[in-house]
Image (cartoon, rainbow, N blue to C red; front, side):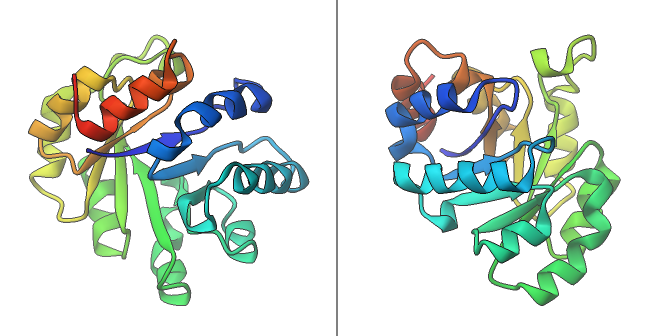
Length: 198
């Protein structure tokens, strides 16, 4: 199964490092998401991740497009409010992986038409990070996967069990946070995502 791991800025970085030491070999792409950190702090985190064994190509930096380019990282992940940058970014940096998070069909179609390599769609299931806002559900996901040609990754409350449901709804893969960061056995959970085990 194709799956991405997203860092969680609510969890101290050293705790995330401890988890990554257990499961890094299973992670295809790691999204470094910390919009409140200084660029200096982000650079330190990137360097630490490289020492853990991640390659620059495996690291996707969220929000900070200029930093991702300057540091030679594998890609950039845009917020929905940034998708108007897609076309120009892809034209200027055709070898970089560029994706975005969206919350409706129109935005997903826009990303597909303007050069996105993938799109995160969510939140599909209930998730603590969106407390009080119900997940949009599998029908919502399937409506987008049926009408957009770019690879779609389901995000929001995804578990090893519900990941299979997302694939059945047409998703190319899933993007996860709490399923790994809150796991009692990150290595086992990561392997389950990789193998597609429930």
